[in-house]
Length: 209
Length: 209
DNA sequence: ATTAATAAGTAACAAATATTACATAACTTA
DNA sequence: TAAGTTATGTAATATTTGTTACTTATTAAT
Figure 1 (cartoon, rainbow over the protein chains, first blue to last red):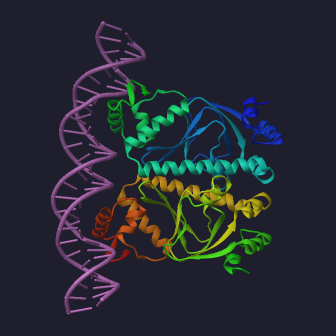
Figure 2 (figure 1 turned 90 degrees about the vertical axis):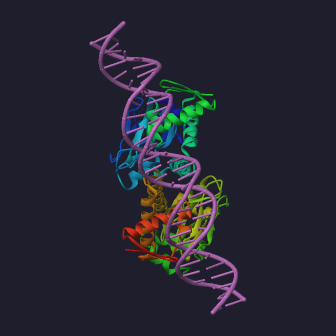
Figure 3 (figure 1 turned 120 degrees about the horizontal axis):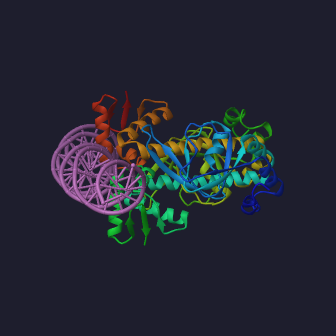
């Protein structure tokens, strides 16, 4: 089998026949941290399912400035790709590997066929949509209702969970880009958090206390 | 038939059998402008399909402050309800009638059955998801990337399209709530737009030039 | 017509965030 | 180790948005 990770992670979600089909038509692809997996305006011909690692989904404005919308975790699929494949074929978001990641890429035709004839696939798709919707709502809440210091702290907490580590390896500039603000603002607020004994700063490193 | 609007609007989307079923199980409900159609935390037992009018979908923070996410137009369904019905049963958004509106309410059980056995319904659902996703992305873009004056102007333009009229009947306070800011800010920016000859202001009325 | 209620205008000020500019610290590489 | 590069700290200032407080205009009610 292409991947026994697939077997382990999805045997309660997909039926046996589908698992085998996924294994047959899906291509296993690996990305290194910070690799662009899908870029904005790129035609979408495959649906990715994330086996290992994390992916961040970003939106971009005309000036090329980014904004993190949400993270994908293992077992999840990029719903953006789904919608794109049904209608518009160009990606509206950028997907970047947050860590080294492995994906199974499934050709659109199969995805459409399964949607037509496989119950477990349909449930998976609907479930994915629901999760994504919730994340989008949270993203909106965060941007609209929270101040930058709160957004920053949430972001850090989120990352510790994602990476399963209280010590983050990040630069202030990277955070600024994800949160769509400037490096100076982030440095300032981080220093504030340090003064409140919530974090400890050092070069390329933030320890959450 | 319950509604010939249904027949007219949906005969190219749903197959004949489904149209009849919708007509049988769906309940026609009317709302007046500003009526709350679905509120936050309200259990969802029906899927609404909008026949006439417009609905605005709002999100709320802990302080009870609102934020407009997007508008629903005739022929559309509230995807939020869909996701809610599949998992969480409580609404995460508030739906308010932007104008007098008529909806067909479909019990969840039917929606699930159709999703299982009716191709045209599945396509409708997927199509709905896609539209909603796009609107959510636009909402995020707007909040994250635009300044209040641009958001305001877009909001006004959007409303003229929705209401098919260049003259809007609104109060500054209502706009402020939709955009999650204060009345004073909106009044200030509107006056600015008026000075730029983009709009003309009077009590309860904004004319887009 | 007078009064009350609601909507809008505006000034003054406060807070949050953005920008510029530069200093210092920590790593990298020749 | 010296020089260059990258990351961070921080002050000064500008801009945007939010808040308070009050005035004026418009409509509704008595």
